[in-house]
Amino acid sequence: MTTENIVGLVVAVALLGYLVLALIYPERF
Image 1 (cartoon, rainbow, N blue to C red):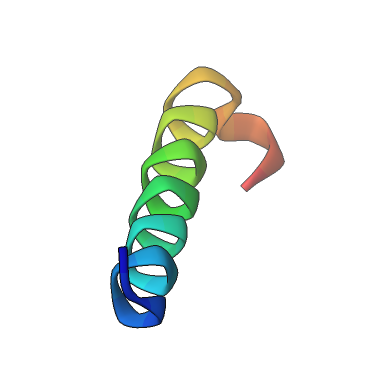
Image 2 (spheres, rainbow, N blue to C red):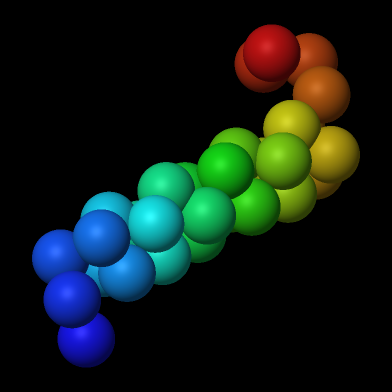
């Protein structure tokens, strides 16, 4: 895996986790 792939994967996972948290805990966002 290249550095770009790793960075893109980390960003995608972080965004996905943020969206899931925003759906589960909407009062915090």
